[in-house]
Length: 118
Image (cartoon, rainbow, N blue to C red; front, top):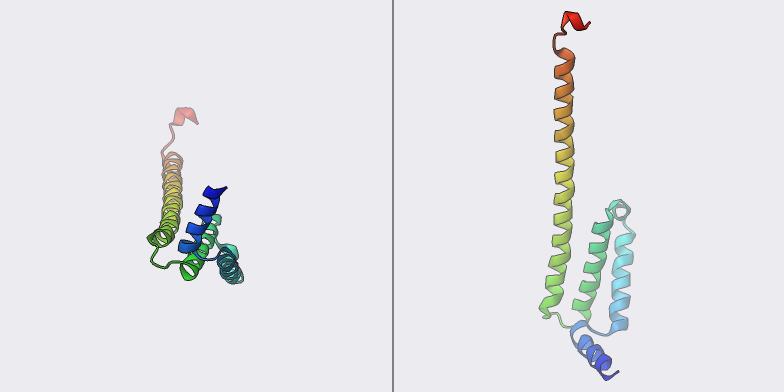
């Protein structure tokens, strides 16, 4: 139990008072969720923003010089960028496959038919 108390004391120094962080984090999340565009975000975007809100609350409540807070924000943003890039790549690949199939179909339809096969 002493170990847990040590961890909690350490986190209070770097992250701030838990109750204050929780209130601020929930307020930030509520503000984000109240914007119409929030409902149209993909799940990974919403989750990243919510995690970033929590990190902002920790920065403002605890030790703003704690590098981990800032690295975590950059990390969550980077995860969204990677996912957007994957989604865009999948979309482009799907479009390219569809275009190739369309060209192959058009070539078959336009090709002269062998009179013996008709």
